[in-house]
Length: 275
Image (cartoon, rainbow, N blue to C red; front, side, top):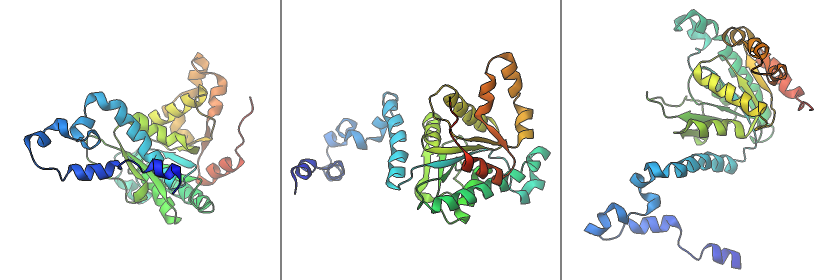
């Protein structure tokens, strides 16, 4: 045994002490909350003063697991939870949602193609990453599973109970309390970002991504908006540029696409723009 190994194992592991603590005699002192080991004390960890620690834990846990799985890069799919599969278009909440169901199939096909690329890297690169929910997210995870690969789901606790979709790889299905940390994990490994029609959550994810790239806080990657008609109707990009609140160059931060094949081609041909 080397000196380094000896030093690394000279003290008891925390899990060993946690097990010992469960076997101590039951007395008024040992039942008191103050006696609990801090790292096993749920009430302590949930105190408001421990928020910085919880933020760190939410950053660390998925990061460590993805590192252990050898995941180097991801391809992100943002998009609406309410967009139905084409076979359910007739029962959509609105005619517009029914019409947007075509993008469910495009998301599924895109994820399948990119996962086939991922498999060629032994699942290290181009791993599909979604929010783990229904709609476009489900389509992305489904496409990855159909290709025989793994995919990531970054779920979040919401007021209404919602389980992740059935197609997320179980060992890569994460759950978050903090939206901010969840969005960091979407972007930390992203090689490309696709944005399908969606609501407030999709808009939030899109605009945070654009802002990070616009301000130089994130390296440029392809940002591909599926469905030009939808996006031009809900966001007047040219009006923002005309008003001077963004520059004309900011409109080059993203591209419109209609099909999975278009998106794949742009990613294949992507070169970082020169300053």
